[in-house]
Length: 241
Image (cartoon, rainbow, N blue to C red; front, top):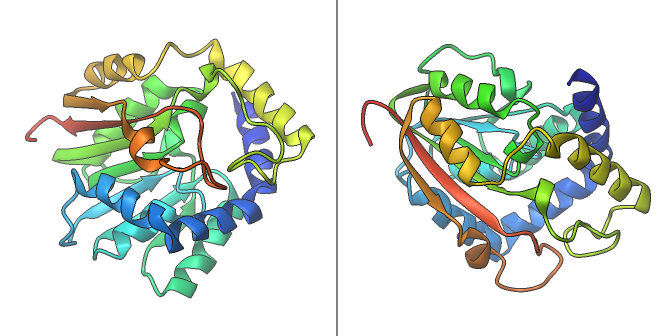
């Protein structure tokens, strides 16, 4: 799967500039409030938690959590994304830190974090069962994993160049996106049902699934609209809820 990951680095690297602009749109608009409300369903607003943002991209979730006083580290496979995240953190005056790292093999000591968060990442992981097991080891007892994602490998209509949040994609980039999905699809089962099974096998407890996430976040068809239904999963490491 290293060849596929190399393709992903190249693809997301090419999208890093436009991706950063869209994340700033989220930060400055209503999506800021909406996504913060989703995080606060399971992570308190008072700060003080150690949190890892897996597949941080240009840092949007990390910025939201850092703004509430949490100690946040964001990691991503794509160097250009991390460069953008670092520049934006400095511009916003936030103290989140960022590193280039493979989320499937996050290099942190066991029990390092109170929470793990991730958005639109797990659909693109070639080894999701192993990733969930590894992530469980990173959490302290009672810690929570929040996974916001969609079954993108089975979305009925994929992105088209110039449409919604994909308005900056070229036809060649859309074709590459579809090609990567094709490689991943045979390795996955329908989600989020599959995620629940994998998380339980990985030792998580109290796994909660919310398939109404997208309806709360994407209330208007605009430049940030995502037509693929999104779900939210909260899963706790054994030892508390």
